[in-house]
Image (tube, rainbow, N blue to C red):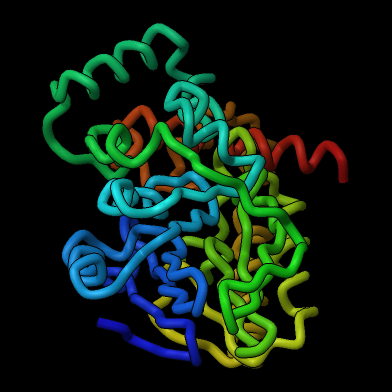
Length: 302
């Protein structure tokens, strides 16, 4: 059931290599509290966990779909905890869609129509963006508690700290386990896609700062949400440098096209982040254009 173990910390790698819409999760076997960190490893894996072990609390690092999708499996038995900044998004899907960067492009009326169709189960087919998934409804709408940033907690012989690491979202938390010398880096994820800061609450500068701050911890091991490996600090550092360079490469591409006179919409067609063939999906196109604007705003301040 578990792919790696470090003391009372059990690692569950996400299905399909932990690629979106799956993610790596942790099972925390505290003497006082048994907890799951994120709920995106896959339905089969988490159903197996639920059948064999108690889950009394689910800690969500942030509100994105691939981290909350299977929360509904545990709603009857567990408390759902969020960070205080992202909690409003989990309580209100309209707020979530606004924060994640869709409403600015679609408008309130289309978002309302989407939500009505979702509630009526009228959306068929799949897309790269998960806007048709019923789990949006099943796994949101409730937050039982919020965890504090930066304050030591103990689940019973299992101390941990939730670190505020904004950039991917405004509220995203990474987890530091001082006894095991392990960091769960959430969506500082080291994927080939590069850093994702595409929501309204995404911030390029904050993302970089948060990622680099993780290196300052006296850690030996790092686990991300989307790489199914437990990394040494040296390996995490090496990959992180390459990963953050993706920001710079995309930044230069955007500025080059902008200086050639292309509009934001015309730059989007170039597929800097998502290939143009995926941008027929209005959510994907909204993210592409919003992120291009973020880079242009960053350039204005340089």
